[in-house]
Amino acid sequence: MENYSEKVMDHFMNPRNVGEIKDADGIGEVGNPRCGDIMKMYIKVKDNKITDVKFLTFGCGAAVATSSMITELIKGKTLDEALEISNRQVAEALNGLPPVKMHCSNLAEQAVKAAIEDYKKKNEK
Amino acid sequence: MYYFDNSATTKISKEVLDEMMPYLTEKFGNASTIYSLGVESRTAILNAREQVAKALGCSSKEIYFTSSGTESDNWAIKGVTYANKDKGKHIITTAIEHHAVLHTCEYLEKQGFEVTYLPVKDNGIIDLEVLKKEIRKDTILITIMAANNEIGSIQPITEIGKIAKKHNIYFHTDAVQAVGNIDIDVNKSNIDLLSFSGHKINGPKGIGVLYIREGVNIDNLLHGGGQERGKRPSTENVASIVGISKAIEIATKDIPKKSKYLIKLRERCIKGILDNIPDTIVNGDREKRLPGNVNVCFKYIEGESILLMLDQLGICASSGSACTSGELNPSHVLLALGLPHEIAHGSLRISISKDNTEEEIEYVLSVLPGIVQKLRDMSPLYNKEK
Image (cartoon, rainbow over all chains, first blue to last red; front, side, top):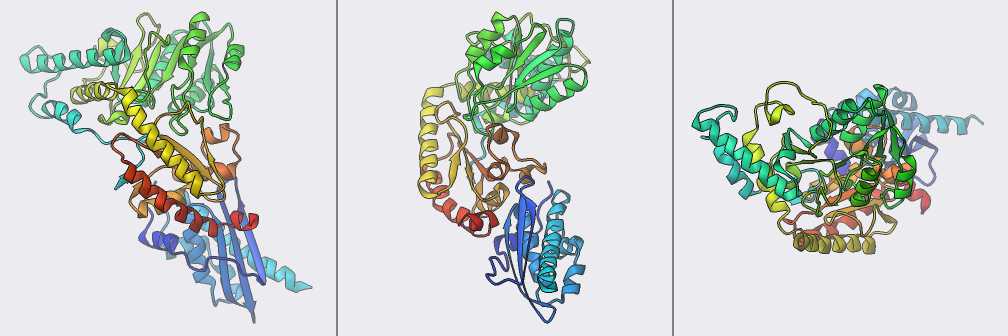
């Protein structure tokens, strides 16, 4: 396996925005225990903007680092902007990921999308 | 650095390196040549072969040097099945073998052989009654590891050898983890073929041994010159051959004394973990296990994360988690014990050697609870249970 970048290790050892948001406006949970990664993303939304985000992750170093990184990327963004963030951008922001770990960044992207979808669903009614 | 990954590899000992050095420098002769320089190499190999034979309780004619434990396993399994395919096409192994055995068996299945993968009990040890039931008229090989690399469980190889002999079936054992840790006598245990490698016993990497009982019908894996009596051609790796023989001499010198020391450290480590970290499972048999093997699963967290955090504190350990190996499934060994995926992902193996100290164990025990808690606080599985 290739090495993790310093930035991945920084986000792994000092993850940003860890935890739950009790009164979250949207919650997205993706992954499963079989593949070894589960991510849960909580968002607060005001005026179509993500005002706060927190995550919980069960998984490897890359799973934690990509979760942490994506929370930084989407905080303060509009929902549409957040939806546009791709797994590639997350990996690039971390100065790259080993190829076998690319699926982790994919999961981070999906977790954000699931949280936004959850928010939208709740606010349809 | 706190090195606790001795089942992955070990540090080459100074005594071993000192024995090897002349053959890496001035005594570089090809052992197949006629002049004095070659004779020196040839003599060194002759002595090394005798040394290894002594350690295993066999004749030096039955010792073959290879490039690794993996090669030895491949040779034993493919060599015996190909040479005996007229007698039958059935192989018996276990679900918890090293990939060197498992993937070789899977390859042979594609070639038309049939393989039975014996399950293990929840302590990681096979049921001899199940083994007896699985034996068929066309079974030509039983290959079962002496001790498991992940969970350290020790198989009853003497009983297996007895059963194999009674049914006139060849018995191969992958003893890569066992040699130097538990007493092995190939005659007492009716072992026909045995693999081990140098780097697990403070010897060099890139060298292995296959013991082949005299009279065993086996094909070559490699074809070439006349080295190793024509059975394993390649210009001899003289320095490493000398190295592995010195390593096994030292490793088998005082197994009971070494074992007592390792068990003391192991038990302190396991107790310290269980006393301070809730929701922890010890994998493998508590008694019939390698003296230096600790393997636990911490619920709700993933193994690679534990390793990365330990590494930040200078501790080298290992995990059977999928994410450490680039594979999708967690350790086949832990799954074979009946553990669910999410628990199998949270495994930690601490493999202790005689060079480790009690202070080092105490250091690990002082930092591990904090690491596990930090990761649990981050885990959606843990927060759900709370």
